[in-house]
Structures are given as structure tokens and as C-alpha cells.
Length: 214
Ligand code: ADP
Ligand code: ZN
Image (cartoon, rainbow, N blue to C red):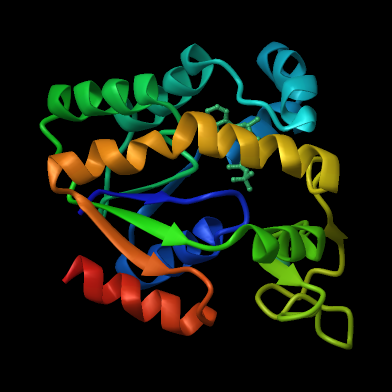
């Protein structure tokens, strides 16, 4: 099964993707994570995208399509792919469609996670991540355990993303509405779209996604 998680920044795509990886042996392909990795490891590409990312703008289609192509053409697809944060433009959606047909893969579903803007701002400004395993915490709804240890891996270092501030969030939301939200219509027209309420609790969203996938 190959699926896309579609929704604005802070909708919970990463959190749900991690659940699907654990439960269905799927592979999470997050272009945001790949780009952050490129920055951390200091590659040429990582340096080129840093400012754009921190401002909250989209990096070029060419770069992210290249990253996805590389992942899809190397290695085994296990229980299928979860695309998280990709595609984000119509050009990326077309490129993904072409890649999938080249590889004789099908896109089974596109899950739209609906969340309102106020909730997004609140979620994102409260967000932190375990530096060793990537588990996502929220100061209000899912605080770091009182002993200061990640409940998933025991790690003690937590980071906040450079683009999780109000100004860059505003740019990310604008980019979402302008460039990414047209994909809702695009996949609706193809008959692939399913919507879930991203404001529900993590477990409830997970079970709505399970139902949507059948
Ligand atoms: P968010 O939590 O805002 O959804 P991501 O972790 O998915 O963030 O992405 C962080 C940043 O990486 C984006 O704001 C953008 O600059 C860049 N990025 C990630 N995926 C893409 C993509 N598919 N196309 C263009 N830029 C991307
Ligand atoms: Zn951890």
C-alpha cells in the first residue's frame, strides 16, 4: 500500500506516519526530514536550501523530486510508502505519478488531515522532538516525561526546529494554501482522496486513518 498524508504544517502527518511505520511495516518518506538531514550533514544541497527552509518557503521541485526518486529507486518497498510532506506542488504530484508508473507501483490513497489554523499555530509553537529517535512532543498535549527521558528511546536531548516560529509559520501556511492545497482537488478528481479530522486525539486520528485505508 502506498499513501500520501496531505495537510498543512502541524497537521500531524509525521506523528501518524510513524504510527503507520510501526503498525504496518511501511516506509516513511518525509522530504522535510531528508532536507534537514542534508543540512545536518552539511552537504552542498543542504547548504543551498537552509535559508529557504528557515524562511518557510518551498525548496525547488527539482531538489525534492530528486530526493524522492533516489529513495524509490533504491531498496525494497516493504509494506509500502507513506509520503509525508511530499508532494507539495502540482509539479511534484505529476512527477510522483510518473515515478510510480515507471516502477509499476500504485498510489492507493491520499489522506487529507484537516486542522484549523489556530490549532496549527498553537501546536507548532509548542512542538519539540527527541534528538535521537525523532519522537514528537508537545508542551501542552504531550509533554516530555517528568524524568526528562524520551518515552520511546530514553534519550535526554530535545530540539526545536528553526522554522517553528510564528513568522516562518505564517510563510509556511501561505505556501500551503497557495501551492499545496490545490492537490486536494487534484486527488479528489482522481478519486483517491479521503479526509480525516486532524484535530481529534492522536489515537482517534490513527484509527480514522486505519478505517480510511480499509
Ligand atoms: P512542515 O512541518 O511545515 O510540514 P516539513 O518538515 O515537511 O514541514 O518541511 C519543512 C520545510 O522543508 C518546508 O517548509 C520546505 O521549506 C521544505 N520542504 C519539505 N518538503 C518539501 C517539498 N515537498 N517541496 C518543497 N519544499 C519542501
Ligand atoms: Zn527518543
